[in-house]
View 1 (cartoon, rainbow, N blue to C red):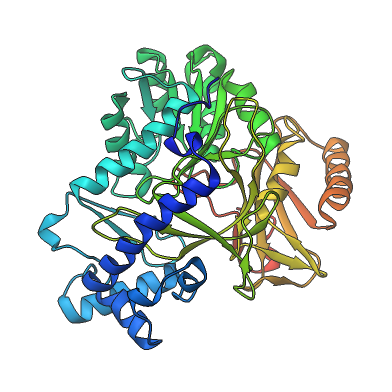
View 2 (cartoon, helix red, strand yellow; view 1 turned 60 degrees about the vertical axis):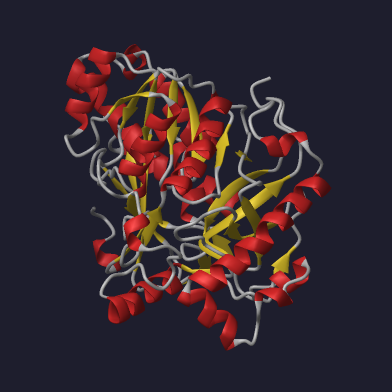
Length: 453
């Protein structure tokens, strides 16, 4: 079966895995304290020493951190050392072999630094994911993320190269026409990009090449960087457009790695437990949540065996659901689904709503919709004064009474499934911008502007 023998963590019991994590965690904590001013100052501020952490309950005394803390550490490092790496980083800067960064869509980019041993760890974790979905060394991979130092750019290229894939590094900057021309010429087996860009490229294929995207011969579409690929209706739209199997993934230059195997309704398989301690916490109270089947909470992770910038009790802001059920593909480890981001969660008349869930409902109306949406807020924050304003791209050649019918049906399904009744502005296909980076589904602007991009 495809999920068998991908990760060593699936060949040992949960108890043995926990013991392995603990053996690796203890020296990592001591290393982080000794080498990183950021961690040392955090420990000292609460009177905690590495030797005090003798059990898992003790480990929860270590303060959690998030991207805001990460950026503050970078700013403090610039003040002290003249560069952003000095607080968190545990090795001399001349030991770096790669710098990568987030896109900075929600603020200043956060940097990831890698040594050669770190790169080997991340390469092995990427290899586990690629083996799980059946990609073989030598297979051609069309790269559709931006070719930059962002995580989906040079980092993913390097990890694919280390696996032995034949990279077709076209990138998204050259536009969909060039990407499609290369796809037709070199016949790659796999495309890797954001789900919204995969949809956009498929939409443009007939117009650009005069053929449907199914004629490109792609077998695998691997998407990351934003919600969408794990949503059933979004997945159906992309798989139908290309005639290919769609896989959602997470993880590049950190050790929280997962990928969907392609089984309908399947979650991401968590392939990196030997290099990553996963915890769940309540997004509001930050209280710990037991890691059991069906549990939902904010994901917090700790990296094991990382030299340069080992992240400890770090939250990316993702709300995930855990599954301990075996998958029909053969996977026997933990799986998870990313439900949304804690900072994207909206509260409408007391109901918690994630924009990704709205997008999934809208995508289910394809081809009467393109699946592209924007949630428009009049001010930042989680609480929304009803109605929630929603911009939806309708399908091609839809007009008049057909638009009114679509609006009414969207209202009904959104209320039935998500318990909201938004004010919907239907706009022509192509109105909403596609991105090779993360597409922000939420925009803050005046409600009077909700009818446009």
